[in-house]
Every structure is written in structure tokens, then in C-alpha cells.
Image (cartoon, rainbow, N blue to C red; front, side):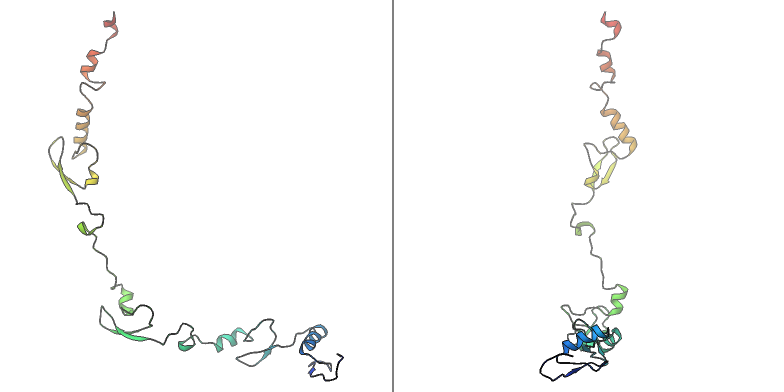
Length: 193
């Protein structure tokens, strides 16, 4: 079909046509026979197939069957497992080396025995400010033990009853609008005449 110097090394597998370039054969086959010619060979099974990009395998079965991500085939492989002794139970176990050494065997990790809760009670707590303090109730002189943050205001009382008593005493008297002393000094309508 193609003109030129004579040698036609690329023959069409479907019809008797021949071409001087592989590209010419590919264009002919896709236009005339409505099928693309294979341009790749599967690295696993050897079957020829067509793909527009650099694909190495003809199918996912070939790809996953040919590839292994175990041991040396894994791109993150760094020489296999090493052995060490668990710091808790003393059993030898295998671990993959990384930036950190294996410290605890899988059983100790699973049951959580490697975890410990820090002691933050009392003076070991970073927010510790001395603990409870003792003061006396302003009304009945009973000892009150509380944290400093629970002593707010000017007065400390031990119960709701003492609080009411303190309120009655603090907000009555000569300066209070309802006190008897204040009522006596306010002129009444009969005394204005």
C-alpha cells in the first residue's frame, strides 16, 4: 500500500497489506479493521496487548500474581526481623527494625501492661498550689477545710443556714434601707406638717 523504496517489513496480520513503518501498519489496522494492534507484551504471561501508556501487565491478575510485597520485594524492606527481649515479661520476640527498638512483646502490648498512668495526685500535679486549707466559719466557728479556689469572697461559712444568718447580719443595721434606725429618721406624712 505504501509507496517508497520497495522493502515492506511490516505486514498486516489480517489482510495482505504491508507497510514500511510500524506506525503505518498501526494506523491501517485501526482504520480498516477497527482494531488496534498490540504494542506491549505482558511481563507475567507473555500475552501481547494494546495500551496507550507504558503498562507492564495485561491484567490485574497478572500484575498481582507477578508482584510480591513480601520480604525483599517490598520497597520498604530493610533486612527482615530482629530479635529482642520484652522489657516486661522477658520473652524473646521478633520485630521489624525501624527508628525505635522493639521494647514489648505482642502479648504485653495487647493487654496494655506497658502503659502506666502518671502520678498526678497532690504535690506531683503540675497545678498543685498547696492543697486544702482550713478556716473557721464566720458564724459558728466550725472548722472548714476546702481548696483555696472554693473560698471566694470576703467571708467563709460552713452551711446554707450560716450563710443566711451572715446575710441577715451583713445587710441589716443602721445603713440598710429596711433597718429600724433608718425608718425612724425618714419623715412620715404626719410629721411634715
